[in-house]
Image (cartoon, rainbow over all chains, first blue to last red; front, side):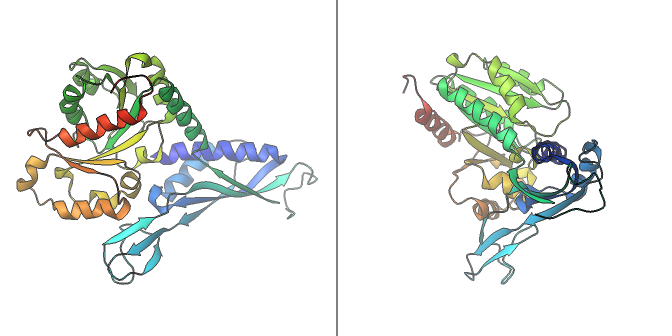
Length: 127
Length: 221
């Protein structure tokens, strides 16, 4: 249940960034979470629905990208990336592997409506 | 419009943890974050190693617990200074809660601080609490597959302690498979094989003492 704590941080960071950019509404947030973090996306979405309870974040879409782990196989020598536990070499099936990465926990980007966008929520401009 | 953010979600916790580490450094205190499943033997391990450490090091314990004070009472019975961190049901300690505990300690009278985390192999690994070293504890009765199932816990450990080794012959625990599972994520952490029914704590005690040697700012050996 560390998803709740992580979502609290996510909402805090998102609100800070939204205010910094004079946003009146956040349409979507894109996060990158490493597979090693063992964060359950369903629980993250549930926590977000509960915690994103203000005008800025309410109704925003939460998009979660998974950062894979890099697996270096000690048996066949092939390096590849894996998205799911338990980790093993996708090529030869060996568990004699060395794993790295997969521990990211970042808010990458947001799609916002700015207060200067005439207050219309129907269109969002890029750039 | 789209805006780039690129901010880590653990930045606030990390800032708190860095502040705690700096405070401990100022007083020459080294801290160890002990993490493992409920019942893996974290408190039992403390009960065995504290009497071996205390002749040369002044130890203290921050005892993370969901609700009860049972573990804190066991540690206090050894004459060790202990502060209870009650998480009120939360599954992990965070840097803020640990910092509150650290501020209650007389740091000038302390060399080595153990933070016994809440029993859990997933959540605690996600939170830096201001430790200098992370110790993952895993017991024979949990099964040899645990290291390979909990990558963050074992990839970030500075030491791994396998406990309840006296039960090896009564279980299907495959020690070599467990060691291989640890090495999948962590090539360098020393692995200490222990049992509270045997006196095999010398290497672990040596490692902990060495940790304090590195961090000492005020005298001492």
